[in-house]
Amino acid sequence: MSIIFKSDTCKIYKNKKNYKLTCEHGEIFNSFFKKIHKNLDVIDSNNNNYVTFDAVKVERLDSLLNRKSLLSYRHLKQLFTNLGKQFESLEKDGYSTLFLKINDIVRVEIDNKIQTGGTGNDIFFLYLNTHKFVPIKDDIITIERPFTKDNLFISPELKNVNSFPINISNKSLYYSLALLTCYCGAVENNTNILTDFNKSKYDFDQIKVYLSHIENTKLYWSLLRCLKHKPEERIYLYI
Image 1: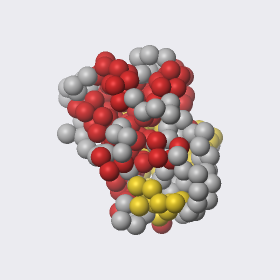
Image 2 (image 1 turned 90 degrees about the vertical axis):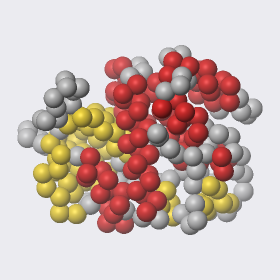
Image 3 (image 1 turned 30 degrees about the vertical axis):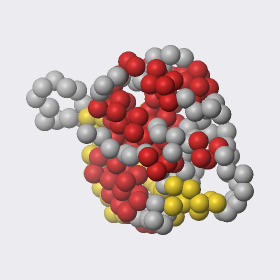
């Protein structure tokens, strides 16, 4: 059995027949892991700390980007909606996180045995690292101590934090998710998009330029709703 994914708190092992996902302290985040298990082709699951599942392939998001450079619209939509629904479930547990990292995300491809239209196997993106989960109360996160600001997908309000403790909106996560999605689907050079998004002067029109290739799609409008500069104006909604 070999380890094919590892974060601070989660691991995925592969053997000849199937995969095994292990997570530390999974019992604390019950709704979060129920959502993950619902998406997987689960064989055995006694608790949230251990689950065995079938899959055609499991791949880290960073490895996928190294192969493809940018993701298709289908993959971008799944990335945005899968992770968003996971974190909506996490809120039911009373937790959230400040921002996302590419190396904490995996793509799981599951054999769609009942497919009739030739649409291919089901794919799901999973966020698998509980280490940075923090309690929320009334959609507010209290940051008690300094954190690393060199993360690529960080909200404008987090960049401006310089004293502690401080309260920020839970909607910081929405910005991070949307920015990560844009990065994975940017036709332009990915380095440029992060340089522009992380300028001290926030330029919403520049964001729209990077999304022009998916303009007027459901995903386009969903991303714009999450990339508002003011947290109170952000809405996670895919319709």
